[in-house]
Every structure is written in structure tokens, then in C-alpha cells.
Length: 282
Image (tube, rainbow, N blue to C red; front, side):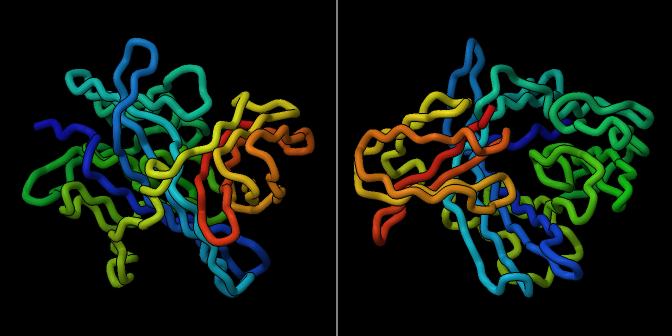
């Protein structure tokens, strides 16, 4: 029996540990959820949101969190046992999961961004809540990882399967309808292992600013219903790269010094998070 990829009432919690100095690590905790529908071209998709908490332990001695933001949308062809991902800011969808693979096959699509790490080593099944689900093993240099039917990659549902230099993402828990589908055995004693990061939802409830064009070249226009405010821009590793006072409801920002990549931002007044978003710098 095939178990489709979840597209509602699902939470994936992912931990990423990366070095910030010799002997110490930054730890990123992330929740992914699927909520709401959208239409792109002629296809119907489900929206994917991400919220995060950065725990700088021993390095900086502080925590930092970011409210949820839209990262893209997925659609699946249940009959074909495939899932497609339309990443925010992209111009086309890419294959995310193909649950028809066998040992010796090579992954394709969004996850397979490092070909050397993309060959299926083994195919077997795993018992989850009384039912067997197919599982595909990947022998990555930092240890074995799996793709599990109806759950995704054990490095995270949207984590490219790649040769991370140090650290890397780990799916620590996946729940659907509040039922645990997957737990990483190394984290089972961690309090709140499967809790949703509470900051996922405010983005939909606040009046989001309009930032255009997106992707961005040198200049971008920010329109917001409230000013003054403070704009903070973060790179994909959560490091703040821009902080600017917004004094008008329409502001032209010069971002020519930012390297190419994906960025996200927060807009605050003196005491309240107004909204968040993300953009691509070309």
C-alpha cells in the first residue's frame, strides 16, 4: 500500500548544526508546515511555510528567532508516486520526490544537487504505526540517511541531499494529525521534540509588505502600511546583513552590495513584529 506525501496537518522539525568557531556550533531549529492552497500556471499546489529559532550556544550565548515565511509550494501526483516543488522566487517546478526508485537508481530533481551523493544504496521497508512503508538508504559521507515513503528525507523535507562540509540537517520529528510518524533516536529525550515553532502562523495574519521586483537586482521597492519601522534582512544562514529605518510607506532600497542568494526579512515597529518575507538577489 502506497502512503502519499502529507499535504495537510503535518509538521517537520529539523535541526541544523554548523560551526561558528573552532570547537563550537550554531544550532538552527526549524519547523516546516503545509497550509493553504495556491494555483501556479495550470496546477494546484499546497503552500509550504518555515519558521526558525537559532540557538547560538557557547559561541555567542544568545538565541534568535524568525517568524514563519513562505518558502514554496508542492503538488503531488499520487498515481505516479511523485512530488513536485515550486520554490519561492523560481520560475518553474522541480521534481522533489520520486517514490518509485530502487537500489542503484540515481536521484533527480531538487534534492539531488550533489550527484555523487545521489545513488540509492538499498531499498527496504520500515514499520511505522503498524504499517510498512518503503525506505531508500543513501550512504552519505556523514552517515546513512533515508528517504521514507510519506515522510521524505531524514535530513529534512526540503533539504538538498548534498555533501555537507560539517554538520548538516537532521529531521528530528515528523507528525501528521498530531500522530508521530518519525523521531530521530538521538533526540528522543529532547523536551518539545515534536512541538511546532509558534512563530509559523503570524505571517498569514499580518499585513505583509510588498517588496518588488523579486528577484532583486540592485534596487528594490518596499511598500508597507505602517511607518516608521525597522527593516532587518538576513541571509540564508540567519546572519543579519542589513538594518535600516523605514520612514515612509514606500521606500527604495539599494541592495547592490548583497551577494546573490536567498534572503528573508523582518519589519518591526518599536514593540511589535509587523511582518516578514523573503526574496532572491540575482
